[in-house]
Image (tube, rainbow, N blue to C red; front, side, top):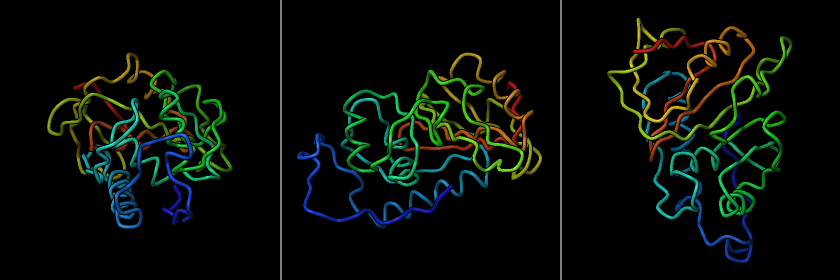
Length: 204
C-alpha cells in the first residue's frame, strides 16, 4: 500500500466538478488518522478499527469505504468502482483515479467482484496483487469466523454480517496462492477490518 499523499490544492470546488459531496473535514489530519487505522487493520488481521467519519457522502459509499479510498487511492491508482454515478463523480474529484475493469485494477470496490477474477500479482511481484474494498453490513469481534495466521496470536474471531455468498470458499482458494493473492478490507459504517491474503479463515 502507498502512504497518503497531500491532495493538490486549488480553486476548483466539488460542485464545479460534478459532485456536491466533500471529502475529509481536515484533509491532512483525517488522512493520517485513516492511514494509521488501515495499517493497524493490516497488521492485526480481523481487529476492528475506526476511521474518521464522513457524514456527507454520495449513495453507494459507506464512511469507511470512502475513507479508505481517500487514503490509499490517487491519480496513479487503477480503481474499479461499482457504486453508482454519484460515487464515481466523487472519486474522480477527490482521488483522480482512472476507472478500469476489475481484472485490471489495483483497488476494487464492487460487491459483485469475485476474488478469483482479481489480479493476484506474480511470483516475482506478489505486492502487485489487488486489494478488494468490500462493503458489508456489520463487523463484530469475539464471535463468528475463526482467523489464524501471521499477525494473530492463537486465533481471532470476527463476525461479518452480510458477506457475499461463497466468500469463504473463494478465500480458501485465494490463500492457496500465497504469496500471490488478493487482500481484503472489510467496511461497515465507520469501521474497517482487514484480511491479508496469508490469513486462514474457518466458519465459526
